[in-house]
Length: 522
Image 1 (cartoon, helix red, strand yellow):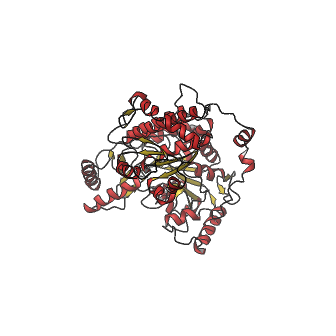
Image 2 (cartoon, one colour):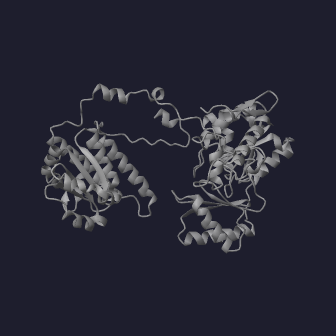
Image 3 (tube, rainbow, N blue to C red):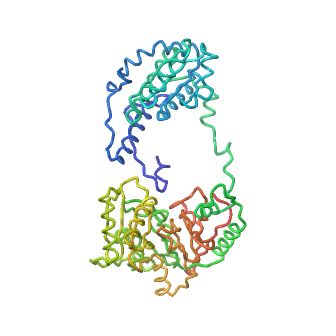
C-alpha cells in the first residue's frame, strides 16, 4: 500500500477481507468483482446492481447447490479424462478464463478455452477424434442458447458434457458464474482427492515466485525517439504511416537543443493534470511538486500558475508556501481571465457577456435533451465551466458542445477542454496572458519564460500556453514542430512527467535555471 500511496494520480481504497485467502484467492476475487460491479453500476443510469446471497444464485431453474450436485458425474469423468474444453459465450469470457486459471494453477486438469465461434473453426475435432479422452464444459447465456441447443445434438454421446447456463451477462450474472465456477473446481478437486487450497509447493515454484526480476529481466531499451511518438500521435500519423520522418527527428533535436541552451527566469505551469492530478474536485499538488516550486522560488525564479479554476487554488497555495515566497508566485485564474499575486483574490462580479448568456442557453438546452451535463458553473465575467457526469469523456463531449454552439451561430474557438471540464471563455480570456503579465510586470524577456501544460493541442485548454516559444507538454503535445514537445519518457505523464522535468531544472544564484533534458531516462 505504501507504493500505491506514493503514486501520482492514484487514489487508494482499501477493502478488508473477513477471512484470509487460500492458494486460489477466492475471497479476494469475489470481493474485487463485487466492488468493481458496484463502482461501474454507479455510473449506470439504472444504478448499482442488486446483489445476492449464495442461496439466490440460479443456473436456469437450479439453485447453485442443486447444480453442483448434478455435476458429480461430470467431475468424475473430467478427472479420469484429465482434459476439458470450455466453450463459452463471448459475453462470459471472464468466467471461462477464471476457470482455466483455477484448473491450471492447481494442476487438476488440462484446459482449452474456445468461444463458440472459435470452436467451430476446428476445435470440434477433439469431440469426434478424441471423444473418449475429452470432457466438455459449456457456459451459456440466453443470446447463445439456441446455438448451443442446435450444437448439443451433434456432440458425440461418448463426450462427458456439463452445462453452466447463466440467466444473462450482467454483472450479477458474471459474479454468479465466478462463484459457481469456484465451487465446481472444488467439486472436481474432491473427485481427484486433492487439497487445492493448500498444495505442496516445490522448490521450483518458490524459486520462480521469489525470483528477483529486476536482476534477471533486462529493463526496456532506452527510448531513442524522445517524444517523437507523441508528436506523431497528435498529428494523426499513426499506422500505416511510416514513423521515420527526418523532419520530425530534426525538429525534436532542434527543440531539445534550444531548450537546453536557454536560461530561464520564470516558469508558468498549468494546474490540473500538470501540478496535480486532474479531478472534478480541487486537490493540492503533491509534496514533491511543492518542494520543487519552493526550490525554484528560493532561487529567485518567478512561478506562474495558469488554471481554469478560481480562488480555491489561491487558498491552497497560501497554506502550502511560506508568505515570504508569495511575491514569487503569480496566479492566472479562470483560464487567465484574472491575474494577481498570491495573497490577492479575484473580485466578486456578476453578469455575463451576451456571448456567455447565449452559450449558457445552448448548454441548458443540451442538458434538457439528455446530454450528461452534471453542472454549468458561471464564473462571470470570464467563463462558463461545464462538468459532466462521472465517466463521460470531455474529449467526446467537446464535439457535442462545439457543434451546438456552431449551429446557434456562436464562435467555437473559445471552447476549450480539460480532462474534467469544458470551458467556454469570454472574449480576450487566455492562459497566455499570464506569460504577458510576467513579461510586463517583472521585466522578464519572453524567451526567458518556460511554459508547461498537459493538453497542448487545440481544443486543449493549454493550447495557448504551449504556443509559447519555449514550452513543454506533460501529456498531449502541441501540433507545432518547433515547440510544445513532450520530452519526458513515454511511460511518464501528467504529474509524473512534470516531476521528471522539475528534476532537470538546475538553478543557480542568479535567479534563473537551465534544463538538462539529454542523457538516459531513469
